[in-house]
Structures are given as C-alpha cells and as structure tokens.
Image (cartoon, rainbow, N blue to C red; front, side, top):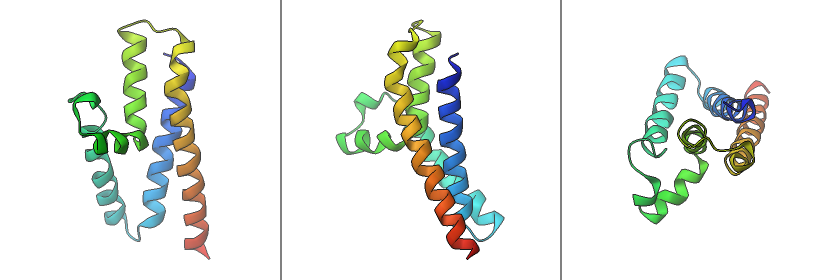
Length: 114
C-alpha cells in the first residue's frame, strides 16, 4: 500500500481524536465523543452502502470523513491495482482534513490550558 495514503489517513484520524479529546473534560466524555464520531463515520464511509446511493446532502456530508477517501484508496490499490498517480485524488482531501483537525486540536488544547 502507498505509505503516503496510509500516513494521511492516520494523521487525519489522530487529528479527529485529538480534537475530540481536547473538547472533552473527562475520559468518559472523550470515549463517548469518539463513539459518536466513529459510528456515523463508518456508516457514511461507503463501506456498507455506496456513497452514490446516499441522498445528496449526505453525500456532501461524507466529504469531511477521512475514512471515505481511505476506503476508496484501499479498494483502488487492492482490487483494481490503481497506480499511485490516480490515488492523489484520495490523498489530498485526507491531507486537508488532517491539517484542519490537527490545527483545530492544537488551538483547542491551547485554549483549554490557558
């Protein structure tokens, strides 16, 4: 698997987790927040139901889900043997999500500490 795709997904997932943990006051709130993010993220990732079959508003909502792009990339790599050049369309949204979530987590953490 392309390591850039995997690292972008890991950074995006870490960013979401850090943002949730910086918003929560207790470990129980962090666990509940992670659960409340991950269940819809898996459902809206296109793993069980194709994104094209979802309503238009939900399709737009899935654009902020890093798991959506990762699953498309994994399918392309393992099932279709997609070259790395075609996977750039899945890499840059995950990189943007990672930058936004990590930046927001840093700001929220600094706000919480001060």
